[in-house]
Image (cartoon, rainbow over all chains, first blue to last red):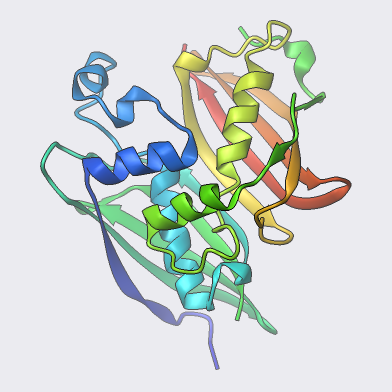
Length: 131
Length: 129
């Protein structure tokens, strides 16, 4: 029995430039702020940043794993608070956890927390799953 | 500036897009998803973002795509997308406001396979002033 307030086990994903390139190809989002350090710096960013939607896709994986598959994810929303900064040659963390907010029959609402280097990167990250 | 007359209007995407298994495979590969029989929850952004770009940058709406930042995103998934779906995508500009010199637009996008609603998404897009 899943009760409101229950916490899900934390999972850590690792992001590097190679993953950003793979996501650019998979998503069709080839904005150079996710690829080129020179370009990112020229528009005032501290370094190359991950696509917000890559962050969200990885949190989506965390949710669908817990829910028993992608088919069980019914709603998913998030606000992009801070970028995940990905310096060359490094692997940076995306640390994901979640708390059960509501249980209505087999519909479970989750509040997800995603941080990178200790900074909260997503806000209002909520999902509804069937489990 | 974005044309304020575009608020409340729905714009249809130019093309219907057939989803290929290879697109689902590459998206799954990036996030480490082994089950490629259905698309992961956020896969549809691949379609919505490209359709937004072609719809919202039309002269009658006037979004400058180079100054765009993604503010937030939500998905309501009626059923998972699968290979072979022929999806059309509309964009409804729900609200437009200006804050701190930025234009903030809320867009709803419905992805349909024929008349069947598959995924409904909402995006907040910020055009930096």
